[in-house]
Amino acid sequence: MDQRKTQARRALLQNDFESAARLLEQYIETCTGDDAARLDLAVCHLTLKKPALALRLASMKITGAESSRASLVRAKALRALHRMDAAASELRLTLGVKQLPVDLRLNAATELSDLYLNMFGDPEGAAAVLGNSRHPSLKERAAESRLMADLYMGTRDATQLSRLFTHHAQTYLDLRGQRASLRTQGRRSATSRSRPRIGVISPSLGATPVGFLTLGALHVLAERVELLYFDRSQGYRDWLAQGFRESSADWIPCRSLPPRDLAQRIRERDLDALIDCGGWTDMDALRALSLRPAPRQFKWVGGQALTSGLDCFDGFLTDRWQVPRASESLYREPILRFDGSYVTYLPPPYFRLGKSARPKPGVYALVSNPAKISESTLRYIKRLAPKRLLLIDHRWRYQNTRDRLLSRLRELAPTVDFIVPNGHAEYLETLRDAPATFIDTRPYSMGLTAIELILMGKTISGVKPRATALMCERHSFGHRQTSDFAGYAAQAAQLYQWCTR
Image (cartoon, rainbow, N blue to C red; front, side):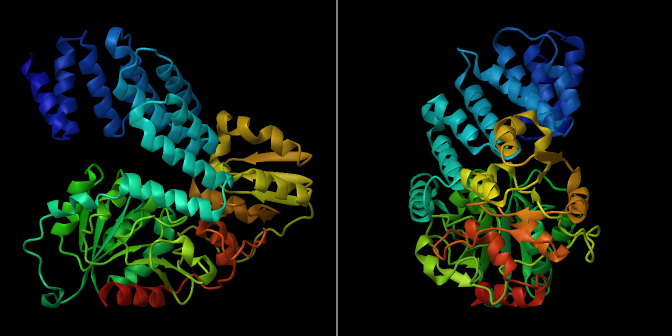
């Protein structure tokens, strides 16, 4: 075997994609017919955020055993280029290959399911992709996808969902049998440090709801503690990501670590407490936390639709509007309530308070992820009898998204307009300029956007949720009970108290 190819494979095993790409490019110059090496190079380019180069390499004529792998690489490159409809078509072709190797089938099914849920707003479609595969290795993912569809579509009540999610967590996420494998030597007493050491773990440390809703308080908290961030993301580089880094005493990239290794990495940082801001969006982190790598652990913003189902948390951080006492039995964790809202809002530089367009009679807008447009939401829209319906979300640019809902929505309003903003700044300006009353989705209601609409002075129309509803059913209603989302100091003080007592 050529030495450069051997060295490239060694670099790939060490996740050194820049070195691997350089060596593979040199090798391919002299061995142009090596399809496997060309695809390895395409994977390097994908990881290095050069999807156009990856697509070009994977689109060259490739035959035999590598053709299916090339199709999967093309799909991932198309997704990175925001060509979601084309990526889905490529994935369907991949899954249509009868003799597709197991690892490729699992990868392609997972990718397509994720596209359906997060890009096309189709939770039922996402569940069907994994459920139809019937492969034993996808049993866990299929079960999880089915639960998410039930959560978004409201096909089960709160008690049933809480019980089913808890069962899923205890079956697939709880690794307590491995707790003894974590090394505990060398832990220092918290009293020997000048400041407490608090960890935050999340795949969303950037311009995401987690960033907008937590960073204000965390900046204040960082004045009294050492904040360590366990970054599970692909590497955000925006202004909120920079804000997280500025508040950190240590930054630990750990996206690719498997659960037990992640738990050990957390344990080695000798924390006084750990705050999880990933929840159901990061299953491997939940697996790691089930091993109790920190002496005190709390669940806060991020994948916080309902209980984690695990008993490894010392508190589920919320407020009296999101989790009233009547719904406490739905949660496995102890409920800890902030005095005010459980979130604050750190406005971006482009956010403008002040006057915005007033609603016109008969004009309504839907601004949530289309995955939240359930039968219950459609029935509520019918009751409103809109003359004009504005659909505002970047996902409406995809044909797959429109195909699921357009005919149903056109039955409810004479005029249906798609508005597809590019980026958060344009999204906020679109909301500000929309002469509409905004419809809250149900059962899974608006979160971050509800806060932004409230601060703009916009009107939100929705049904008051039951006191026994899940937290995700109460998001928008809870936010509407709160006038102040800038209580950073008060929130930081309560975080400090819970993490250090």
